[in-house]
Amino acid sequence: MMTLIWLVIFAATAILVARKTSLAGILIVAALPAYLLRTSVLDLPTTLLEATIVGSLLGGAFDLTQRHTVRSFFDAARRHPFFFPALALLLVSAISVFMPTDRIAALGVWRAYFLEPILVLPLLHISLTDRKTRDALFIVLAAETIALAAIAVLERFGMLPIVPPWDVEFRATSIYPFPNAVGLFLGPTIVFFATLAAFGQTFKTKVRAFFATAAVVSFAGIVASMTKAAIGSVAVTIGVLGLTISKKTRFVTIGLVLVAVTTILAVSPLRTDLIQKITFQEWSGTVRRVMWQETVTMLLMRPFFGAGLSGYPSAVAPFHPDAKVEIFQYPHDEFLNVWSELGIPGLIVVLWILVTFVRTLRLGTRDSTRYLRLAAALAILEILIHGLVDVPYFKNDLAILTWLFLILPSAATTDLDNRASAPPLRKRGLG
Image (cartoon, rainbow, N blue to C red):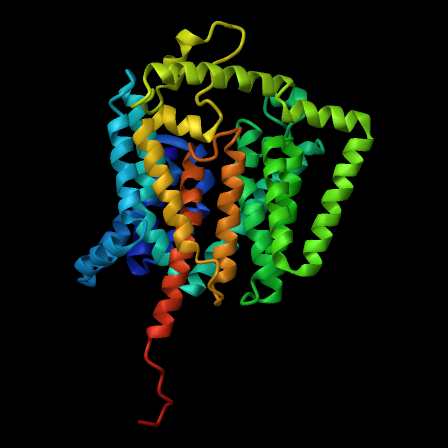
């Protein structure tokens, strides 16, 4: 049955995108949670998200061929600021497939986290360069975050069941198998939609209110999941937003920070709890400290290539003496995650991508796309902060979401340049 659904989604997506390529981004974003729905086609494991991705790629290729614009498409792609960084990431990650002993698992990670997200970048770019399509994409993403967060809130209030073993801790997981996934997905979208609600004057009032609702409900969702890293990274990033909006919000933000700091210092339990979290003295912090020490020891034995894709658990096992503590799939730190999975070449390429992203922001330029560039910047900032203690990229939906935020500034400015260079429309009956 699931295979039949996969084929239907694949065919429907291919037909829709072949008729209008800019729909691809909306369909892919709408299907992000569908990576949880797994099946196999021709004995190959796949997901319903992949059905949408493959259908979009096929439909987009058919549309380009029919319009005889393949060459111009590739010429434009080569001029894109992320073309060579993304190509380098694809190459480095492909090499990392051959590092671990379990190359089948590595190949699956490469396909889901690198090959597919990078292949759909041109389709996402096309969707983001058209203002109406871009707005529709944002609305779909906002509706998606509200739904995911609402499920988590309902779980927290006991109106929906929480999957074991998280029901013991009463931590909401929404549709995911673990609570951290809630914070990882909703964290960057909270600051993104909060920024659009605050700055997006080009949106209608109802749309801005919808984005504000998405930010508020999503924050309630990460509170329900008790994802402390997400709550902290969102709080810091929202603070940066508050300092950015206006002088009034700047003073309010500074005042709230002073009140919060004073309260924490004055109340002993809050002060003790914060110190334990900051110094990683609590259980989750202790596990992370031990995990990071083991990871560094392992990486010093194989510094250049790291453990390879999906190779971390087996590579770190000899340096993990406590059998009572589980070995995680990743070391829960973005720097160590990349070093372990992609080696030093991967770290260099990721730095190249971040430098390219900063260059595309052009935050000093004040035009009608500034709010989009600011929203993308704050979303990536939240991901980087959250990445200090978690894994905000190495998951099917998170990889695509990250790239969506990365290419948004360049896509938005491309749209602005296209509109500026377009010839003025002549009035009917004149000329």
